[in-house]
Amino acid sequence: MSKNETSSTCEVLISLERGAGARLGAQIEGQLRSGIRSGQLRAGAQMPSTRDLARQLDVSRRLVVDAYAQLAAEGYLTLRQGARPRVNAACVPPVASDAAPLDDGDGWRPRFDFQPSAPDVAPFPRTAWLRSLRAAIGTMTDAELGYGDPCGVPALRAALADYLGRVRGVVAGTDRVVITSGYSQGLSLVCRVLADRGARRIALEHPCDPEYHVIVARAGLEPVAVPVDDDGLRVDLLRAARVDAVVVTPAHQSPTGAVLARERRTALLAWLRETGAIAIEDDYDAEYRYDRAAVGALQGLEPEHVVYAGTASKTLAPGLRIGWLVAPAALVTALRQEKRLSDRGTSHIDQRAFADFLERGELDRHLRRMRQLYRGRRDALVGALAEALPDARVRGIAAGMHVMVELPAGDDEAAIRAEARRRRIRFETLADYGVGEGPPVLMLGYGQIAEPAIPAGIRELADAVTATRR
Image (cartoon, rainbow, N blue to C red):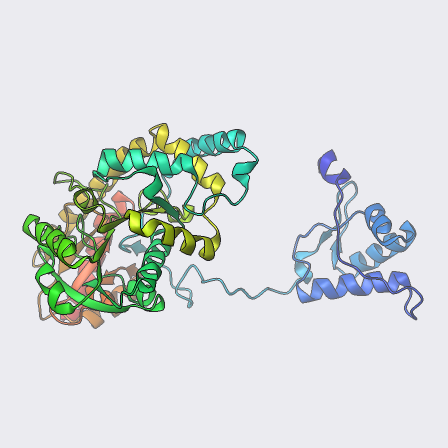
């Protein structure tokens, strides 16, 4: 125990009733005993020293010494010479938690995790981020620690405007950038603004993340599913859908991996100009591409009709909770108000750190490393599938962090799921995205599985498929 720990003060909530029938010492014992039994005082929690507690309660130290001694004798406290008293873990009941379990709730954990759209956070550049975080803390003014502009810290808005213009072709003046707490919040903000401006229906790609339907509906808009094929969104169906806006992933459709064809990009831009509608461009992982050239952002061609949305969740880590919008000038004021009402702004300290991280080129370096890492895993996955499941059709391999594996029409998806679960293999299928017709399509991600484990995992998956065919 260090000198600082033993000499620092520590408080505990005890309320004494002087003049009551119970002795003060008995009240101290009873309240501490009750707090430990109920879980209010958690296992291993530090307690005040006898001198500190006596001073806090304005009682003699002898009363506290005797109370602690009695609780230690009963097993509630651990007393050690020269160390602060602690709650004995053996006497504390387990505390129920509302947090989601790390497994599926029944102790099941995957042996081979092919969960799609989940990035590998282990290579997160902690040292570089810590350097940026220290720089942020060291240079921020007192004013910057206040609420500030809900749209974000000027340093990050400027850094993002430069970065997005350079790598994605986005037309992004600093005044158009709105920092959000991830993409989901950004989508929610835009939908609420559109609803306030009179929009009623919004097109969503089909298939897409089912949560987007919930977000859109909670904002007061009616989601309208518009199909996707190998060339991306069926733009020709937007007019008949009678929608006021559309959410689109032109660079890499989620989850199919399709790229919006050139003629459809042209048709979408023409439809936006003609109708005055708004497109929300979800550019969630365009940085991860392996076998094709970069596809520029749609927003760069029509900045007054496209809201560009990006996030650090796939490129760095979801836990950062940093996203951004580049909005048409006509929407910025309303978005600022919605953001203020939502949470008054994303963490300023993290924004400043991310700005420094961008300006020093750390994101570019990290993405180069991750592209190489993911490409190696993708190649291992495709090779293993060709060997173990030769009758499967593999699609969507040019970019992203997952592939689509289409099995023969006679395969039973439900049986494959059950058998794979029994073998502790995790993946998703296209049915999880609302597609019920057609042959089974497995969504196999390679973001969270190490490259050496991929061949063994695919062989086990192939055995599961074979077992269901028998």
